[in-house]
Amino acid sequence: MLITRITITFNFISTAIVNDKNYIPLKDRKEDEQPREKLMHLGAVALSDAELLAILISSGTKERSAIDLARDILLMADNNLHQLGRLSLKELQQTKGIGEARAITIAAALELGRRRQVNEGLQRSTIQSSKEAADLLLPLLRDFNHEVFYVLYLNRSNKLIKYEPISYGGINGTVADIRIILKQALLHQASQLIVAHNHPSGSLKPSEADKQLTQRLKAAAALMDIGLIDHLIIGDTQYLSFADEGLL
Image (cartoon, rainbow, N blue to C red; front, top):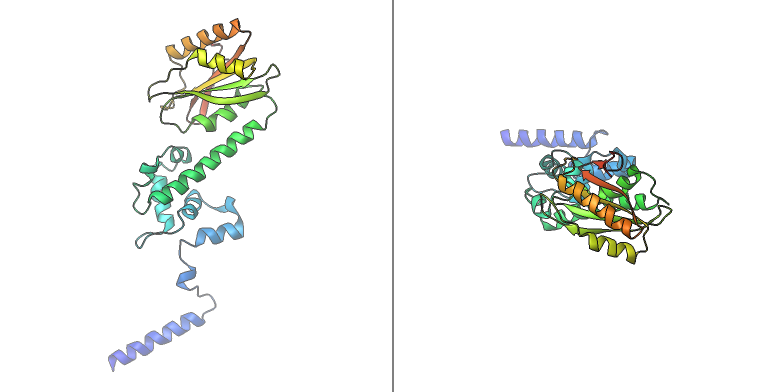
């Protein structure tokens, strides 16, 4: 009798809930689905970083939702999107529930974001300041955990002809071969150069080696009637310009 009464009461409550106009079925309240619905109705700009990341993750695990996994990953990156861009595939997979496929999806989305920023910089007809050069170089260099040396080749009107990495180094430094830089400048028929490298530590202070390389490159380029316009050091989301600081 007691079991019958409990069953009747449960069925009554269930029926009342279902008939309630404000009732939302559990399947429609799944946290994994909310970011997609929110994006459709409000646009991507309305979503938090965790919600956008959850869409890339697609689904959660038995224990944790996609948003929970997204928050775990963001926590690993100190809730900093710049730091998120520096996480390797193996580091992303340290989050339980993030396998190789999901890690690759996240890395691919971040790379598309970088390329969009680079393409915006390439839309400039000319590079007239250190800031304009930095707008192009920051997305290229800031996410590396080791030093990378880039060169921008320009004509006499400061129009960008080509940009390319020259060398990759370790955590503490990289070596740029002046001969290769000038060989490429002649190949691209460049009249001016802007060089740049990153400091993975985030420090913008130029080392003595940085200063010496800059002066040697400037002197060697001048012999070929090629001007060295600037040398930028990229650290996280900021930069230092040798030209602006009077170091060139």
